[in-house]
Image (tube, rainbow, N blue to C red; front, side, top):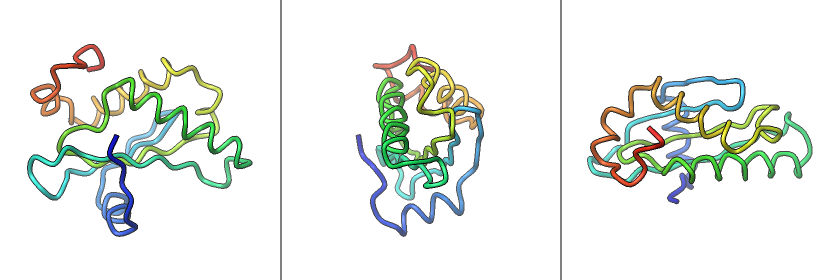
Length: 122
């Protein structure tokens, strides 16, 4: 899974992207700079959520949900933020929440044309 690594790319997605919220996670989505880019994902758990163990567990849960849904989305950069409820949620609940946010963003119409392997996720 390709991830957003540079602070400049992270800042671009964070400042220009559209935000979507769910009780289990928050998402910021932005189209990629280059056409045909396979897309990238970043996983964030703020310090205010708790200890390092709790934050790392939350990010692992987000990674697993993203992997289950076939992320990254072609043509989109995403930042997924953990909430206080992320670590306690079941992986299927997180996957469903992530799918709802992506549908709400409108990205699925374009992604469905590219993704033939994980149709059940969308």
